Length: 192
Image (cartoon, rainbow, N blue to C red):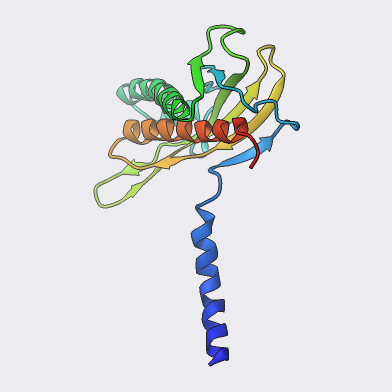
């Protein structure tokens, strides 16, 4: 009886570990100031997303767009605008729920800390009726002082489905903003 119980527990252990895997943070810390200068802070400003040197899937953006028609290229430009808008919306709304004010950066004095966001890689995903693949956006987020001194850096890579590239990437914008807001909430809260 004991042997059977032991085998059952050993067999269930990997399942229990997998179920806990989704409980951790949705970001990767690339660098973090210690001591934490964000404790108790309630104001941040965010710069527009930078898309320089963007890769789409395994191609440079220029090569990717070179394979598309003019209508797609126009839509792609609008998709990047939508990613920026949805990221800002997700970030500001989710941060406000945590008591943190995030505003668009209007200058060095907009807030005590600036959030810089760079997107270096995008997977547009696909939808063909019977099969689909999620879109993904990899955000590199750096929080600095107004004079540009780096404090924290994280990486966030949400994925989302949808019928169109616009839907998938816009959803990734919203999700990415919410994840960054959660990070801010953790960094500004007192240690437990």
